[in-house]
Image: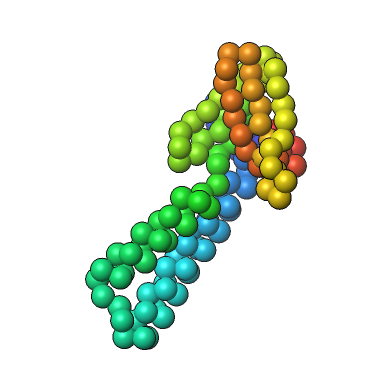
Length: 129
């Protein structure tokens, strides 16, 4: 660990808020699923088919809310999402720009064609990144 409390993994600095964000996501999804099943059961309309549909809806919510895991190693920035892992070489960046208006994302593009996209608030919350 660094003196700032940021965990290091093989000289890699990771997003220190990721675990808390993941916990919040799981709590939100679990509460949503519980509420859906509770209301459906109270109405007397809960069946196995409806419970499976509610679970599928909760899974879809999990996929949408799952936070990306951002880490920085020597000369590279890595973003891991459910869609896969993307990396850019930070010393070979050719483009840095933002997308969107309401939910702005930071996009980094390197000389080798690597591209990562993540919420700019992650950098603001983790100055060591």
